[in-house]
Length: 247
Length: 297
Image 1 (cartoon, each protein chain N blue to C red):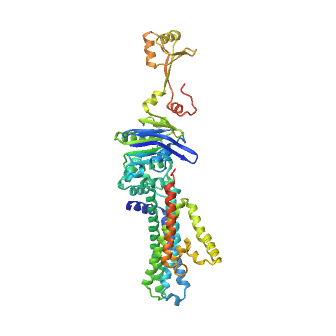
Image 2 (image 1 turned 60 degrees about the horizontal axis):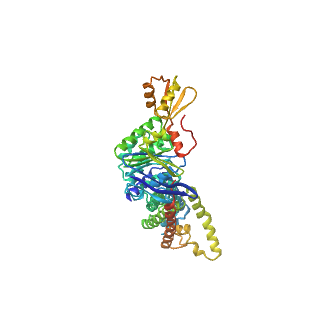
Image 3 (image 1 turned 90 degrees about the vertical axis):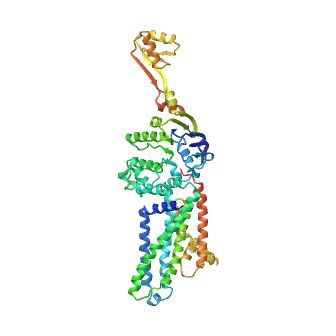
């Protein structure tokens, strides 16, 4: 198992697109953090939750990137035909899916790590300049939650990629679901006085993990619901990948 | 070492492989021949666990491929479709495979040198020519120093020197006791490499024979021309040989040229031409597979 995970890590490290995702994560984290600090009043900046919120604000774009990377690390295999070579080394399909899920989660965690470095760098410099004391405890609390959320996003992305196989299909389908279909569902559920149900939908559940607004499910519930969606997608990935003939 | 037993594979309504059985023994290079679409690649992928059989089963080294421990150290494979990420360098592609297969990284440099790709290892795969891609695929197949090789059209894209190198290399591997299955749709391409051939057509086994037997199938009549054709014809007929006169002094005789030449010499008959008519290997192949084509002239 270790060597297969090491091979997956080497696959990622030897592709430019991985570094591109890392760079985008750093830039987005820097921009979001700068926007959050710059857009807040001095009183808000001194509030207890502010630095906790700073980390989570940057975690949302990181979660989206992790979701996309999770999908790409599986669908790349089908897109470029490397799946045959991979399955020659890992002929048991369930094991292949399991390794991809772990890699997706690890990729998400790595992406959150670079995001955190960017957030911390921006915050330390900016808050230091405007004499806002750093609250390590708040930051770490936010970071812990963000790591869980972004790792879950990577896991969910890998599971979706394993279920769909088509790179364009999974990327476009997921983005359309997050930004178009699920908001429509929320609106329709709201019309039916079923707002609470909307929190259980995949994007809302994942958003609940990295959102500090207090809306929707509590943190543990959001984690549980996101895991449940990941399990559903992973089960589909097992069936789909297990049955597929690699021709 | 490789066993295919009553393998059947359907893709929807298409029957790709139909009740196919054969074995590949250690120390042998077995040619796997058939026209395009005959089911060769599907069979090879079934052997490697990439395609699920509709019926029957395959095994390598006594077990299904999926049950092999560290399979890439036991079985090397080259598939017809290219299987490296275009954005990765050739060397990194092999490094990934080495790590995944538990193979020492030093083997990467060894196999790159072996296929004459050491100088191109740092280049990204998308810049490789067809021949370089094929060499990289061969390097990947050889990475684990495997006991069994399954090679789908390995000569594709190789230049004549590369084909010759491949032929000699495969022969040397077989001498070490490895089992090698090599597919092609051109019999003459593998004729000098293989010990026996499995010929399939439309998914079904046509013949599993030694290469020597295929060559024997290519043997045909002998054409002989003499200024004394009438006398020669009667001598040949007296020897119970089947003789057909073509009218221009030529005779077509169903016998080997050695026998005819000796008979003519013993009877002091002058010969102007003595030529064995052989079908080409491709003609034998086409005849066996029922494809259009005429047997030698």
